Image (cartoon, rainbow, N blue to C red; front, side):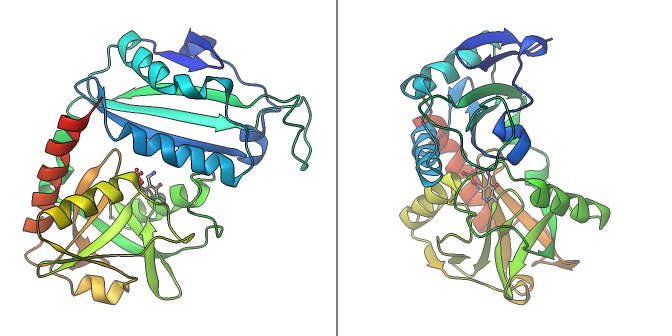
Amino acid sequence: MSRTVYVNGDYLPETEAKVSIFDRGFLMADAVYEVTSVLDGRLIDFPGHLARLERSLSELDMKKPAAFDELLEIHRELVRRNDLGDGMIYLQITRGSDGDRDFVFPDPETTEPTLVLFTQSKPGLADHPAAKRGIKVIGIEDIRWGRRDIKTVQLLYPSMGKMIAKRAGADDAWMVEDGFVTEGTSNNAYIVRGNTIVTRQLSTDILHGITRAAVLRMAREAQMQVEERPFTLEEARAADEAFVTSASAFVMPVVEIDGVALGDGTPGPVATRLREIYIEESRKAAI
Ligand code: PMP
């Protein structure tokens, strides 16, 4: 069945949706994005995603599309039109196109940003089988640009990282810079030692995960200790457990790092509990 997608004010069949070949998102990755999960037709952590989107736009001097205030309504309309139960809504805003290719930004007075949204249906999103067996990760060098706190569509290296992991028989990669883990290719990274959760502190080195913020709040409420500091792969391989968080994977246990099994090689109790709490609380707060 063909999806209904949203492009610059119009709801269209996916085959009819078009963006200019001169669009700076296409030519220069001059674009930001957000992914919001949907469970039972309702949006998870939507205000957080909108706040981060606003920050990404302002850090890049990018104009908000006229429809910015209507973003919640557009999300809901796409859920309705596509009869979406479980899945994700992808939103992208680019600096638009002034009909040519130039490194200089186009005049925002005359060039409108491009706004695109589409749905991805993932029935049973919260019951992903990987959550029961856990995932395997490998370490790779982090060679991305220095403003990873801005959620841009420059995803070539994270995409290559995922492929390097797959070829090595793993599920994902954790990126390492100056000896310390920054984050996963599309998620934030955590290790657990006893009752303490360790995850890298916020800075321009990592994306400020919306799921990260919620999970750390819930962990503290559940009387777990949280340490926000960098950790090495060596420390991670010796940890009791590990996990990653993202809007679409929620809390996903990690059971192996660089071929070394953590604990007994099955999802640990802290990751399992946090996943349950996060999904339960998120369903309650969904809009
Ligand atoms: N880090 C990176 C590099 C990511 O791509 C993502 C997912 N977009 C995350 C962390 C997790 O962020 P969130 O919880 O907001 O999905």
